[in-house]
Image (cartoon, rainbow, N blue to C red):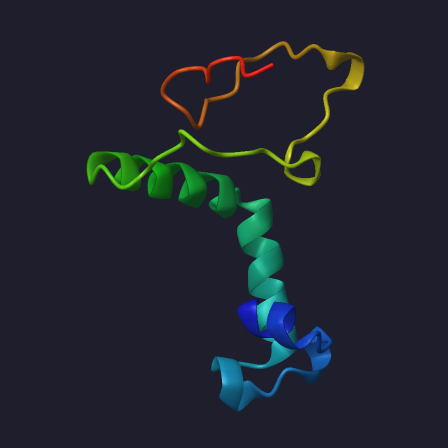
Length: 92
């Protein structure tokens, strides 16, 4: 995935020697892991590990709109786990 993002090459053109498998195989694994929910679980585990090691400092952070899923109608029926331990202070 990093190779494709850095080079901009199409998955089918990824050289197998660069990533250890064909680009199509890498793409299929990415698709399967995405469908299996690997990335949100990995993100949650990484944040937990960083918190345990006291290496996560969210005092100065920003959330870009391209990384936040919009909710239809602005309301959700199920709570989502937070990535921060406490709400940030209002700076407006």
